[in-house]
Image (cartoon, rainbow, N blue to C red; front, side, top):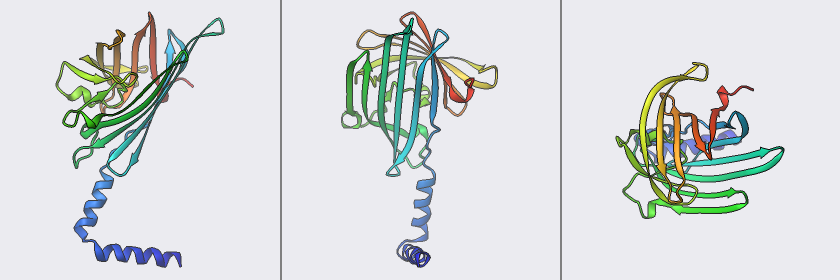
Length: 232
């Protein structure tokens, strides 16, 4: 009985929809590129302090949902001296029929950041006031910002909802993770509105996937190691 209902629905679709429309619908859905999920192990001066995950899902065919979760905990003599938690939901919209990452447009985010029990909220709909402008947040997973042919660009701070200038420089193509992966290394440098200095080395593979990161924080080296290259 169930199979007869399915057959009837397919017949209705065929009757009321032209072959060209059906093909267009199928191409629209299949061309939607959903990135691979990311999971980084985070180290401070060689000691693991937490993780950073990025999960992707599709919504309403033209929207990409991005859920980011960061948990860091620095201890000294068994006592917590620094705790950082960041939850971020980003929404991106495909702006052309090709639907590749370079066609994504950042439209909104909702973040909660907890730094040593001080809570910061950021909830913005970007497209409301930046309709014609491509904006890149400081979540870094979308490598398209490297292809804007700019030595510097204005980026959106997901922690405090502020804009600041970020300088971008390609350093070299390198073999990383015991020479098992070739990736392009970039230097990112800027200063946030709160006076925090960003000095980041970040790597992307040939497909534009974020694969590694190193930056300085309060005199310590923070390193991101992608899960598939992390020693279990």
